[in-house]
Image (cartoon, rainbow, N blue to C red; front, side, top):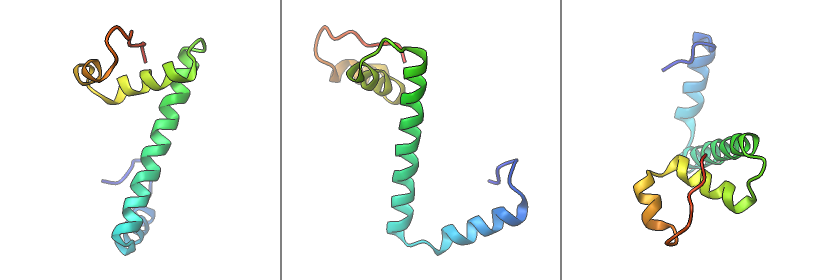
Length: 84
């Protein structure tokens, strides 16, 4: 699917580049995208909650990416889960 802000020609070039990548290159690209997305989420959490310490930011991040029931089972009993 082509992004609305990407011309058909650029989209074609992007597809060609992706198809030319090895499996390892595609996996690394996916990992970089995930890391970037998590950094953006952390920045948003810090912006909304400047009072959060690094551990609380990580808990809030986990709350964004995991279902609450999974997080509740994984958290230490009695650990309050912060708002993301």
